Structure formats: structure tokens, C-alpha cells
Length: 240
Image (cartoon, rainbow, N blue to C red):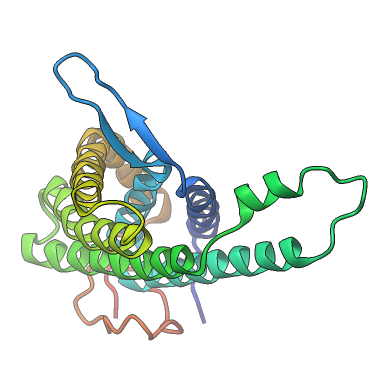
């Protein structure tokens, strides 16, 4: 029987909502700068919100273990796929004659198949890379130096995610140089985001560990990403 934690379900719900919103705004290319000595650069609109999902991934893995993170990742994956599927269905339905915003609706909610593929593949691969790295680094450091695994796992996960999503989504649409610029700037900014959020992450993780009474070490965990029905850890401090 799956143990009941006080905050896990709420955190998972927030994680999925943030992911869905980030996907809605991801198609817009945003121009930042120049700001002082920092030159202008281009990034996806998802940069505003998407890195937060990696902070949630760190929280899930650090406190509840890899199994909880795996569960959240799959819920986010299926939630995103459902959002895209329903959006496509509603777009295809005939608009009422008094509805004069069909073009705007299509612009906001219409997603090209390659964007859908890019989004789902990159999210899945990046989040699992992040969670796996986080869990293994926790064992390696014996639970010490939290910052090394929050930052280290983000560096791995975001490298996988950013490279996949930008390459699949924009190849052939923009120049190779532009793609490389978007990948590099997006990756660096996402990692910087994680570094700057480290004090906040420390506070949240510390509070949740006390509130939930658990600090999971994935010593005997099945890291197969497809074992989505594996049990979450009991409230004793270590995962199976």
C-alpha cells in the first residue's frame, strides 16, 4: 500500500501545473537584453518557468526518493500529452459563427507535431537524467553537500533537455548558429537559475524533511524509468 505523505500529492499537482503552463508559453522565442555588459540573447519563453520543474524534481528525489520523482515525471508526461491532444481536438471542432478568435486560439493552443515530440521527449529524458543523477549523488556524498547534487543533477538534466527540445523543435526553421545560441544561453541560464535558487531549495527541503519525517536514500531502488507502479518509500528514511 502506498504510504500517505502530507505534501507529496500537493507538490506533484503543482509540478504538473507548472509544466503545463511552461509548455503553453514555450513556442515563443523571447529576446532579452542587452543589459549593461551582457549582450542580447534569444531563448524560449519556457525559460521563465520551466527550470522550476527541475527544482521540484530535486525535492521529490531528495525527500521522497527516485520512485516519487518517477511517478511525478510520468504524471507530467501524460498530462502534457493530454493537453496537446485536447487542444488539437478543440481546434478541429467547428467554431461558432459568433466566435471571432479562431486564429488567435490556434496561435496559442495549436502545436505542430514536431513541437509536441520535442517537448515530450526532452522533458522525459531530461527529468529522468536529473532524478537519477540526484539519487546517485546522494548515495555518493552520503547525504552531505546538498548543493552538489541539486546543481550537479541540473547540469546533467538540463543539458539533455535543452539540447533535445531545441534541436528537435527548431532544426530547419532557424539557422544552426541560432540553434546553438539558444541551446547555450538557455542551458546556462537554467543552471544559473538553479544556483540562485539553492538557498530557497535548502529551506524547502529542510522543512519538508522535518514535516514528513523522511529522508530517502535510494540504496535498493529499481531505477528503471518504466517501473511506474513501484511503491514509494515508507516513512523510515530509506527506499527499497
